[in-house]
Image 1 (cartoon, helix red, strand yellow):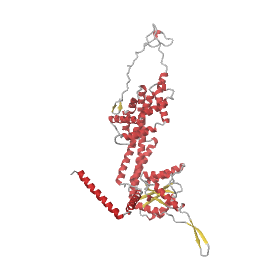
Image 2 (cartoon, helix red, strand yellow):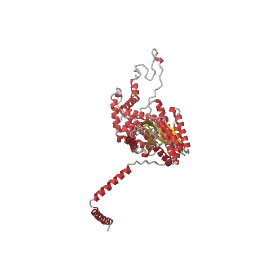
Image 3 (tube, one colour):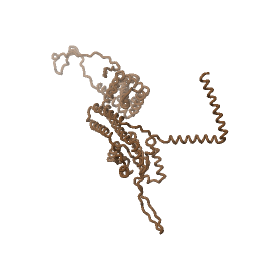
Length: 538
């Protein structure tokens, strides 16, 4: 008997037993069976939704080894920035490099500290200062752990002084281990963006809804629930807490036995107990992990700033290489117009530019790799239809130019320059986003699409076409408008043209023969793909 036959027999027996069991169960329970089945299903669904509705904020533990590894990486980036910044006096590069090195030293020395730093942030009139005072006197004094509580300047001020104050507030938040972000109601858009910015870099954050006493009890709970809902996926519900640091005075009315009524105002105690309980839990459960997480966040910020500075230096050095490549290609296409596919080949398959940019961004392609990448970029341009779209846009702009009649190859020249520039900018964006590994065509296509969309706007195209016309056409017009020197026709009895012309009033016998002119051999100009040898174009 084969295996499938045995499976069929056993399956039939199992189905028969199941039907027999269900029939007997129905006979026993009677009409209650459907209600039991439906009720069980509803209960299961309710439990599942209740379980899934709780957001899971998963935080990976940070180890000392990981922080030290990132510190080594940051130091390497700063060393590379110092090497590649040829002139550290430009744009404050020397000061920036010095500041970043100081931050790395501070992070390294802070790894062994035993204090936990808290920063209280928020906008205007949300009760930050009052909260800091309460935490210092009602909480920090009774904690064995050494705590540092800092009240930061207010956020979101539109004045010049407010901008400076906000910058200082972010510095304090960056140096802290825990951020208490205070609001006095539902979050505004700017407050929500600030919270996202803080949590995106790995900072520990607790959202504090202060001044809840200014709302009716039912409104208080509605605001708290909405805050927790907006923080889904960002903060755990227990990290969104409602308090009242300075409750409003309540009017107390006392009816005496003699019929008189006495009234007075009574100041309630601050309502911060839920916050104190949560902070105690954070200290107990996370402890030194707060310091390691904060250190990792800070060193990651230093790395990001160093990469931005390094990319800025590299872009400054890459731009002249792209300019040179685009005008060489443009000049070739202008002098020798060719169809669109050949235009693409000349503009996009520019192996020398790929080679130079790869060396600049520490990718160091071989000559063959550079040619392969250039060919890949050409195929991506074809796939995205960039050649047709760009040539049509450039042609429409050239129609409005009064001097475009000078040469029929002007459109090809401008289009070739534009495509070469798009290829160069795409490489820069790709290298900055993908610092290592092989070229991924799908990622390259996304980057090229993005670069093309950013550089196809009409003002940019008009400025680029004008620059290209100035580069290609005006020298031609100036050369053609310069009058050629007149040459006297030889007459009978006069010297041959190779002899020196006579000055006015000179005698014929005074004329002296000129040395023979060196007439260059005619050169046949053909289009040929540049050959790459050791990074140079032949």
